[in-house]
Image (cartoon, rainbow over all chains, first blue to last red; front, side):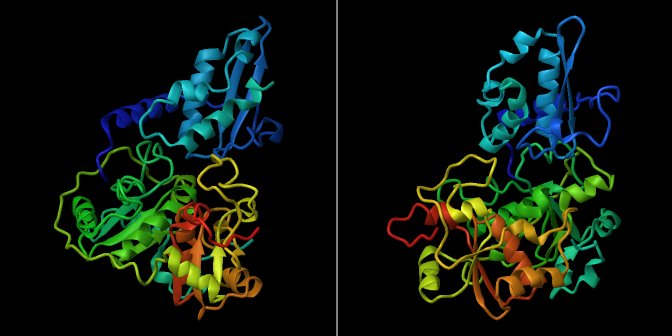
Length: 128
Length: 289
């Protein structure tokens, strides 16, 4: 109930706005129950990830986030999708592991565990 | 695993400290209530909450910004006044993580003797999964005057010297952290930053009962019979015992404090909020692995 610092408030609103653009994996890629092999390890938001190998050599990225409280996971999925879907494989795998810190790391008041959660979402394919 | 049953039918020592999501949905306009959300994730409340709910941030609102301690009485009175809470207001807490942070806020409120408080069983996740109303509108609250009530740490809070005496006296402790933290393999829960203490392990003699064992998969509390099996039959605790619960900073153990005190009727449970981030850094105290 204390007033949220303005910069943090703006940042939270930005993330929520991004999360609102989240679109779940289309049915032609995957349907429930989602296979555990697509479950992102260590992500408590129960995020799933599917890479789509497109005929033109680019990748499509698809996600599902089963925990309705996974706002940060949905935001990160949107950022990854909007930034990397349609890029060539070598571009996608070249993304650094510390991407979440690059994006979120300077946000005042954002607790490290949120960053860990976001990081866990992108790990499987940056490590691939 | 227990089948969800009505709160009143679960056999709790004090079922009046819990309300169901259905009950809350029927009391959204009740002026004698204030619904308070408290979460770990700061994104959750602004992304949507129960209509009329205000937010308490466990770090910003309940902890002193300088000392490692809770806010003092005047600050607490100001906080509740801004939320439109009087001593007569029933505060309904709920939040993420199976009410872990909601239980923490509930416990801090008890330090200031605001006993007119309850937890919403199942927390935020159950409310959301049931498809109940959510809003992003932050309610306009008319501030009121809340009296300055001195904080009383004696009954439900334990400090390190008291814990040392407790250990020497062979009295029971419950370590509610994960088995990995209890064994000393980790200094924090799996998937969290491995930080916060110079030594791993547990306070000698402590039993390990991870806090989340007290809840069902849907976030509701287990029945009294199931809880008794966990804490009394398997761990040998008795409602007459003087028990100290601890975790890393006292939040998870607030949840266990709530279970032992209200749901099982233990009469003397204290939360050691210094917990492992204090004990695991203290020079010369005994540690067991």
